[in-house]
Amino acid sequence: DFDRLSIEEGLSQSIVEQMTQDRTGFMWFATEDGLNRFDGYTFTVYKTVPGDPSSLSHNELKSICTDRSGALWVGTFGGGLNRFDPATETATRFDHDPDDPSSLAASTVRSLLEDREGNLWVGTHGGGLDRLDPATGGFLHHRHDPSDPASLGNDDVRALFQDRTGALWVGTNGGGLDRLDPGTGRFTHFRHDP
Image 1: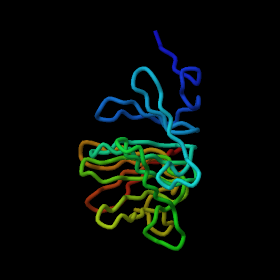
Image 2: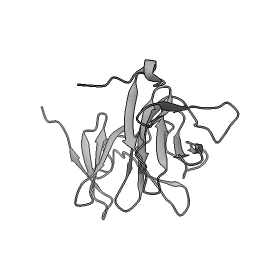
Image 3: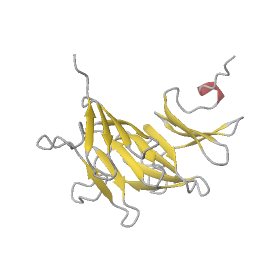
């Protein structure tokens, strides 16, 4: 049997894009209208608070992951990336700034992954694949370059996974599946061949 948890039970929106569990056992749901925490009984909803830069940057959420420090990373549709601290219930915002080449590559974040080395990878819509540089707080970019066959296959990144060898698998919208070799920084492409 399935237990159904919907807006009648306190979920903020019926479209759930992604979910994660933190190390204390709470379930977190990225919905199209806010971040939801479920303790097994009730939902607590976190949303943008106008004028409060420590709240989430946007309510339409697309991706979520938990990092080794216990923080949640929340990707939005058009509002960038948020690092949400469950202990303080506050967010730190990261967004695309066209005047800052080390800023997030695009404002829509569709996929997130913390790899085994603790690197945060960010799959964006239209900006390619970013890696957060913890030393600078900036982002390092991997983008599609038509003149470089070893570059990312498409700048719309939808899925991320790290395999046992440490390779990063990147699912794209239109460019197929890519494998990033962490040693060389080069991508191998796997594409549909009709």
